[in-house]
Each structure stands twice: as C-alpha cells, then as structure tokens.
Length: 83
Image 1 (cartoon, rainbow, N blue to C red):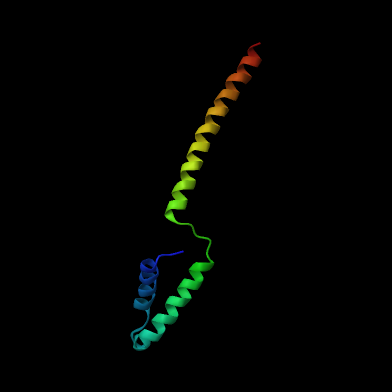
Image 2: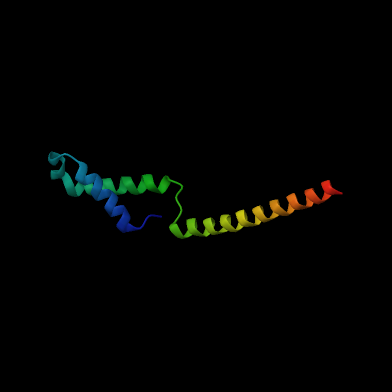
C-alpha cells in the first residue's frame, strides 16, 4: 500500500492542476480526490521497494547460477564431442 505522504503528494498535484474556479470547492474535492486516488492505486498490482529489491537480488543470483550452468554444460558437451 502507498504511504500517506505519497498519496497526499499525488492528490495535491491533481488539485493544483484543476482550474481556479474549481478550487473554491477545494476541501470537499480534496477528500473525494484522495479517496478516488487511493481506490485506483489500491487496485493496481504494486509492490514495495523492499519487495522489488528482494526479488531483484533473487533474480541476480539465479542469473549467475544459470550462466554458470550454461558454461558447465558447454564444457561437458565439448568433452563429449572431443571423445
């Protein structure tokens, strides 16, 4: 879930983009806009930075192992071809 500070920043950016005559309704609109943004973002399949970094680390290790295995397989295939 998005932290409240980020949600507030997104809401404020949307509010700042509104025409001046709509800003009169700012408080009510701000509450509704915040709820709407939270609902939309809640439906997205997002992960936290920590989850992303953890998966990135797993994929890096997996890639290293795969490369190592591919080299070993190539070496073994070459040995069999030379026999």
